[in-house]
Each structure stands twice: as structure tokens, then as C-alpha cells.
Image 1 (cartoon, rainbow, N blue to C red):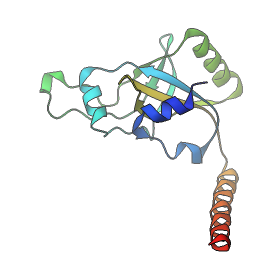
Image 2 (image 1 turned 180 degrees about the horizontal axis):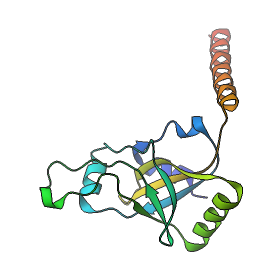
Image 3 (image 1 turned 120 degrees about the vertical axis):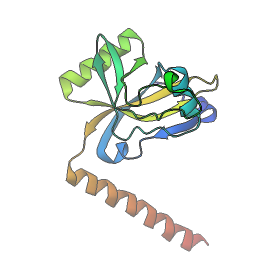
Image 4 (image 1 turned 120 degrees about the horizontal axis):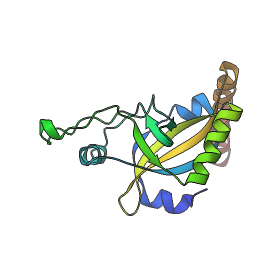
Length: 161
């Protein structure tokens, strides 16, 4: 849905959810803006956020990122601090949000954040993955496939080198 090469050049991932691809089949990815307060942006720029347990879902007629941990910004005063695990509004087009919510409700899929990054203009973005949960056997199959690819690469390097 987005221009991947331009995104890869411009971005510096602040938070990655490495476990998401292990736990879920990611069928589609969506880029969404995120509404943050000033101390959250400062804290993100220092690269200390965690989205391991985070998920996205509908709330109050909008799409929200829930359970994402953005630590307090130490240099800000006590009265300027943000709540570390508050629900943060995600900015997507209405049609896109309706499509995603329809898939989540109808097909039992989940919206999982794959990463948070700053784009070329310095705006914080969240990469969401439309995901379906894996069973234990699927996870084992993925590990087996990854190990086989790695071993195949070693054999090919040894043969050519």
C-alpha cells in the first residue's frame, strides 16, 4: 500500500516488534500516523519505546494503538509528563479504517504494530500489519524453513568459495 523503497531510505526505526512475524501471518501492511504529545516525541527520538505487547483496535469511533510503552521523558518537568501506556490515536483514511475494521471483525484478524519510525519529514509513523495468529505447528514450520534457508546459503557459499 505504501512506497516501500522511499520509506526504507527515510526511516529510522525507533521501535520494532520482531516477535510479530513469528507469532502471526502478516497478510498486509498499512502506514498510519500517530497522535503524540511533545514529551512522547522526545522520548521516541531517544529510541526507548516498546511495542511488543501493543495492538491496534477501534475505540470511540477511531483507530487507536493500545498498550504501547513510551517511557517518560526525564528532562521534562513532572507536570509535563505523559502517561506511558495510554491509548494513542492512529491517523488513517476513513475508508481504509472501515476496510481494516471489517476484516478484523469478519475474518478474525488482528492489527499488530510492526514498527514505529520517523519519515523523511520527521513525522512519527506506525507500520501496522493485518495479521492472523499462528498455531504452534506453524511456528515450528517457520523456524524449520528459516533454518533450511540459512543452511542452504552456507552450502552455496562453501561451494562457490
